[in-house]
Amino acid sequence: MTKPLEGIKIIDFTHVQAGPACTQLLAWFGADVIKVERPGSGDVTRNQLRDIPDADALYFTMLNSNKKSLTLDTKKPEGKEVLEKLIRESDVLVENFGPGALDRMGFSWERLNELNPKMIVASVKGFSDGHHYDDLKVYENVAQCAGGAASTTGFWDGPPTISAAALGDSNTGMHLAIGILTALLGRDKTGKGQKVAVSMQDSVLNLCRVKLRDQQRLERVGYLEEYPQYPHGEFSDVVPRGGNAGGGGQPGWVLKCKGWETDPNAYIYFTIQGHAWEPICKALGKPEWINDPAYKTAEARQPHIFEIFGTIEGWLADKTKFEAVDILRQFDIPCAPVLTMKELANDPSLRASGTIVEVPHKKRGSYLTVGSPIKFSDMKPEVTASPLLGEHTDEVLTSLGYSKQDIFNLREVKAV
Ligand code: CAO
Image (tube, rainbow, N blue to C red; front, top):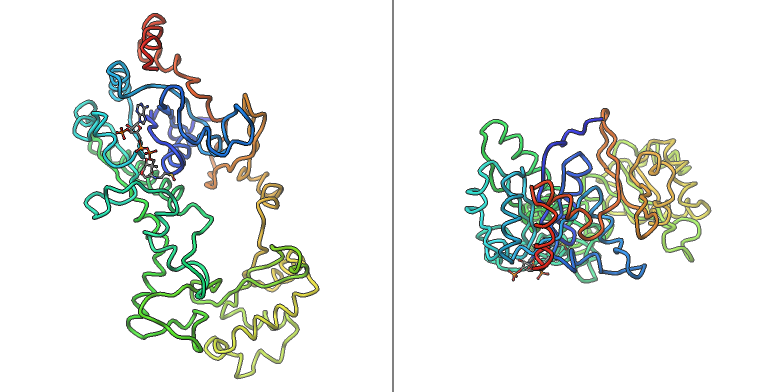
């Protein structure tokens, strides 16, 4: 089956997570992604948090599937020459070096555009160009703090909290992928490449837009009725942390189920969707609440919402999280069990859909990874193993016209 991005050649100058997540997605969809890595060491994640000695770490294998690996020292003149050849025949260059690193290497946007005016140059940085912090190097948690996620996550009586979800890294990579695909479509119309830049701060903030909504509501009316602080607590002039409260128009909370005393994940998320109040009362065996003025409307319920959640927890006390959801789904109540990584890894539905896949690897044996979360009717992205360091160096150099002797010479000067 032909994949939509087949024929698109990408120089993958990315490392760690934000950039690799982007290029991995494009590789799944058929792009020829050539990861350029420093000879001898490669992407730092190959060595980070290793679980098997001498085999690439899962951090690397789970972000670099379907790619080729070319080792190249792009600070040496011989390495620069190879890179220039590659640039002339590629469609996209993606990078997430620290600020200014590509310029210092001699490959500014102007130079890249001169070498290949049709090439799209895509970058991830911590902060956008011109921002007063644009000289900073940034990792995931730094971005979550800078983008508004940390100040609005956690409980009101605890410190700002980091989400386990990679809002700064993989999320930024997904934004960049959208930018690259847009620029490729644009190039079809204009024939010209362009620079695509995404900052981690902006990408986190884009996911925190409801909190920016709340800041404006707070400034106008002085309170936020869906937060646990309402109506009994106090509001300051900034959006507070709301614990596990529902972020939209319906209250929700994480509720204890049977076994919570010993199992830290014996919980469900329960949402009280306004129009589902009647089925909720029926499911809980509380028909008297349906028309009780103290419960009938969302407004009436809000002052004693935690008392309501307490009653629901009473109902949940003799049900596992799975049993509870199986009952509640019959009443059309939005809810889910709190699932652990172990449960997700073994979920037969996720295996069947290709969301969790097992991939054979030359050194590791097989490992689990996350497959494409995007499903297509005409294509099933297949996940293949991440490359060993320099696995495709000879193949790529040969395709650029280098002879065996040339490659030997490049190795002699440690340029590849
Ligand atoms: N050959 C020769 N040199 C190479 C090379 C290659 N193949 N690949 C990289 N290098 C060099 C770079 O040119 C750079 O050199 P100089 O600093 O001397 O100019 C050097 O390696 C280090 O690059 P770096 O600044 O990107 O690396 P770092 O480990 O110090 O910082 C990170 C890492 C992630 C903080 C930084 O890259 C960054 O802020 N990136 C942008 C934001 C980002 O994507 N962060 C998310 C990472 S995922 O959590």
